[in-house]
Image 1 (cartoon, rainbow, N blue to C red):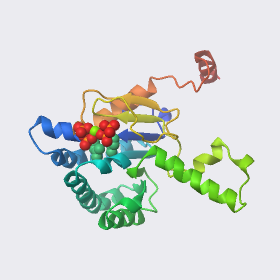
Image 2 (cartoon, rainbow, N blue to C red):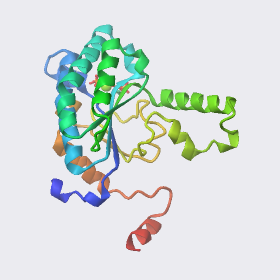
Image 3 (tube, helix red, strand yellow):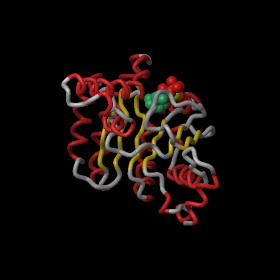
Length: 250
Ligand code: IPE
Ligand code: IPE
Ligand code: MG
C-alpha cells in the first residue's frame, strides 16, 4: 500500500475528526469511556503512519468546545485519559522527533491537563519531524473570534490599519499559524459534517468521510488509503480541469 503513494504529492496538512468512540464501545456493551481509551491505539497508529510517509502536519480534533456539555463523568474521564496519555506517550513522540502542539482555549482545561500539555509541548519543542497538534477545547468559531480580537487590539493601538486586514494576514492570527492550511480532512464514524472544526483553515480541504469505521478501529492502512484517495482527486481551486492539466504538463 505505502509503495503506491506518490511521495511528491503528499497532503502537507492532514486534519482528523476522530469520531465514533462512544458507538464503538456501545456496540460491545461497554461504557463510552472504554471507546475513548481504545481511541489512543488509533492515534498512535495514525502518528506513525504520518511519520513514515513524511506528512508535515497532523491536527487531531481531541475535544471540542461543544463537548463540554457532555455528562460530567464522561468529560472527567476524557480529561484524566488526556493527562495519562500525554505523560505516557511524550517520551516515544520525542524519540520519533515529533513536535507536540495544542490549539484551543486551554484556560478551560483542568489544571493537571493544562500542565501536562504545556510540559509535553516544552519537551518536544525543538523536534523537527511531524508537527502533531491536539485541538483541545477547540472550535473553529472560537479560533476566528480570538483572531478578530487580536486584530482589533492592534487596530486600537494603531499598529495596524483597517486597510491592511486581508485574507493572507488573517491566517497569521489563527491558532494554527504558522502551519499551512488543511489539505485533507478525514472524519470517521459515519457523520458528514465539520462540527465546528478548522473552519477557515479547511476552506479548500479535500473531505473524506469514512462511513464504516469508528475511530478506535482506524489504523495505518486507513491513513494510507486516505492519502491515496486524496492523490486521485483533482484540486482545481476554482480553475478548470483543463487549466490544471496544462500546468501539470508544463
Ligand atoms: C469522538 O467520539 C471523541 C470525542 C468527541 C471526545 P464520540 O465520543 O463522539 O463517539 P460517538 O460519536 O458518540 O460514537
Ligand atoms: C467532534 O465529534 C469532536 C471531536 C471528535 C473531538 P462530536 O461527536 O462531538 O461531533 P457532533 O457533535 O456529533 O457533530
Ligand atoms: Mg461523536
